[in-house]
Image 1 (spheres, rainbow, N blue to C red):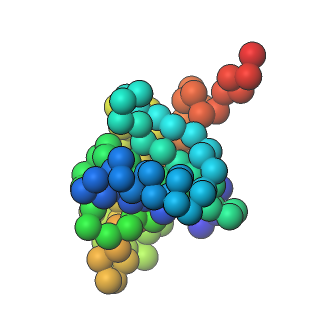
Image 2: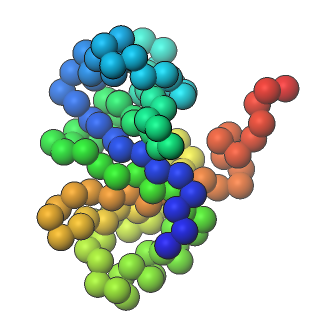
Image 3: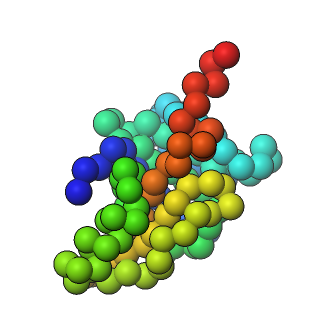
Length: 127
């Protein structure tokens, strides 16, 4: 599998407090924010990867791995044939990304993400 980008997802009970911890206590730099201005999801630089803290999506009691791939449908077929546990079939989300969910043998959630050609993440917004 070719991984284009990756991040660890945290869906904490108190996202604002956790965002403050990573931003103000650890001093991580912000890569981007998304969602509502009063309660944004925040993606921090974490060395060569990223850490996302968000209240958006299903509350997860443990970290989730986020792996960007070129073709989610192809990975779905390959992983299913290899015996991976598919938790959720591929689908386009309201925010425009194509996602599917699998689990490792210990139950750690892994989301495979494809950024479609027409998604804003693919456009240079610097003007």
